[in-house]
Image (cartoon, rainbow over all chains, first blue to last red; front, side, top):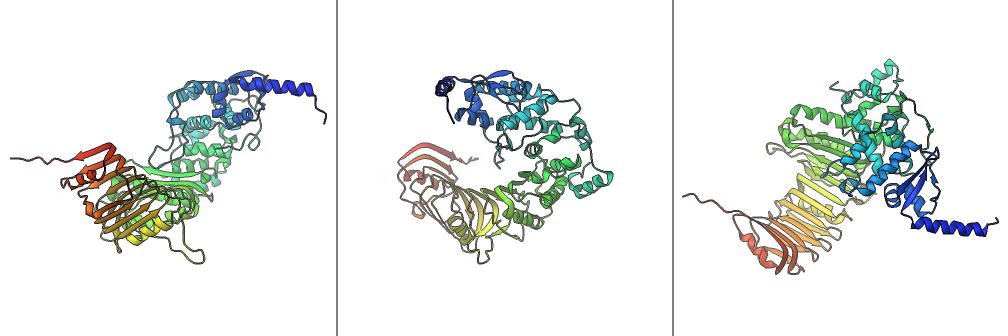
Length: 186
Length: 337
């Protein structure tokens, strides 16, 4: 394959310039551009870290076709807030240990960050975090969703999340019997 | 957590969500499990089975099963035991990252005797031996009265477990090994904690010295019976905390050991640990003639001594010339005239 040498050099120069910048530009599915701290993006997202390390970041906006502008704005906002916040124990992985709390709770600002989101925006953000391999943001958003489920009956959960019950009456009764231990105080 | 990148779980892109749509059910299984895990209760997670077909089996693949009951009410105990039984019976994944069952001590007498407890625990341990690849924690409440009969349990042979912590009042036996599988080894185990049980000295020796090749942290609080000598030989151990009743002689040969907590309930102690930097000593007596620190220099980072009424233990300080940090707990008897 013939390679355009001039173009290759320009590409090289651009990559060097890119490497020198301390932000990266991300482009949403609907073409909006967002600047994000390169350090935070690399630290918080395995996918962005891979792209930065692999040099596949585009100066004119790296295409993230899977993510809409509203979700990407939240992702970028989260990364930039994280870049400015003091790192704490909350960043440590969430694995259970018998002498520590089961999960590192979200920090106050993270809680507020997800609390202000609409239902739709929250789920868009979960998907974006999953797509970008952002473990900490997934933790925080999953925590929020589980808070929305806690202490609620199945009927209430269905209502909150618009889940359609597609069981027959008989099937439902069968499961309830099989898992009677899970419903003993209902 | 899903680390598989963008390709694997790519799903239908919704450019414009419509209110009233079910967003949660279209999330990938890993994320739903992650959400259910944060409910902090196996029962709550399992009860989501009835939501819809999508949710039927999500809970049965949770990476961790956690049942922690600390309400302090007796009437919560039996349902919790039933919950663990049922959850393990219904669990569908071949590998479980963590099985954690913790019963608080507030309702120790609510269990109706330790014999029931050990019997109930036995199937959990068998399950753990087959499936637990990370952490196994089973904490039973201590019995109110010393039991007249201590039931036997086999230590779960978990080749994949990294952490095992057990607080069960039982007579522990090492797993029975049937030929041709040879000697059973806790290949992955780095941290072992055993509280409250009873074990033969020779089996403790065998367990720590030959079956745990990468053990770093050891905490034992056990009553030693039968052969009363314990010998711990390990190149991997870094921290060790021992409170062994009924031990006649303790021998420790641990090249990497840095941190030792020893409750002196032992007649004769011989420790060869040249890297030892921190010693915490608890108990009435330290007799230099009966305690030998072989090959250890005269400097320590930390010496933490609980000087009981006997105060003989103070002579342990004379063993060292330099200690960066010294902690002394002193009991002074009040004399009433």
